[in-house]
Image (tube, rainbow, N blue to C red):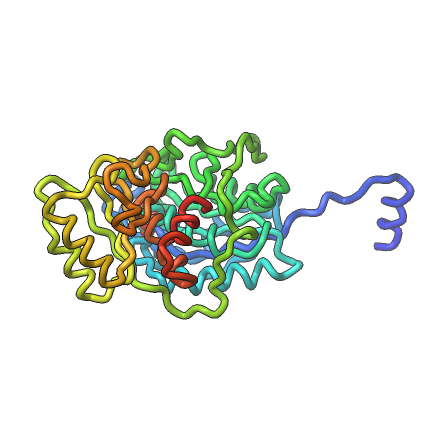
Length: 346
Ligand code: SIN
């Protein structure tokens, strides 16, 4: 060993050290199994364990020192606030260790963008955290999970990903947690960042970045879950023609501390629903206007006078991500102006 070290000193050659990447498995289709190799819908998610996922990709050992931990084994539609708190605390504990360089989280694709954004707001580290999944189960012909996992480990171990916030890597593409969304029920190219654009690509076993999110995240975030056991109840009411206030009233009666109004267009308020929203705000529930459209800025004081109604505008956040930011905001304040500032910051 000493001879090898001496040789390095003499020759100036240093051994290329591999990064230490922890894989935290939570379930999803990447860990799913189907009845036959052509079963790509109607399979069972979350059946294969993390050690089996790692063993299926021996190439991982060439690019990183990989360890696995099974955190949950669920389909991601069953992800809850409690799962997020457990996961966020585990990620923070691991990233505080000097022998962990990055984390990959295997996850179902259905709510991956939500878990990613939650972590983007609560992880206290510059080290890379990369969420990955698959659109086809592990038993399918052309399963996308193994290559997606290999690529995610490369991103998590790369210097280029440091300080970029929580990332989502699938289908040879790298996205920011804040802006990525699932856009197709079943095809492998489902994950996109419409209009704002993806951050980079994976090619030939290397991550290439071309842009970064301008919004604050991870090490710059003001949110801290280390002493939090539950998150405030925030629910989403969906806008549509002939909308009625029944769902909104039920959420308020069930104790919602905040409501995301996923309105039509630029977050317009239906005549039959607006009075219930105003009444809810007067009783203390925070109201955030978002849009069901999926792209564009929700204009503050546009389709509603937010100043007068004491509402918050969601900016470009989707309703499901606005829900996450509002929950975390409510752990710190119930001041509308301060919460609006957070929506323009993260
Ligand atoms: C899930 O989200 O757990 C099921 C669907 C998927 O992973 O693609």
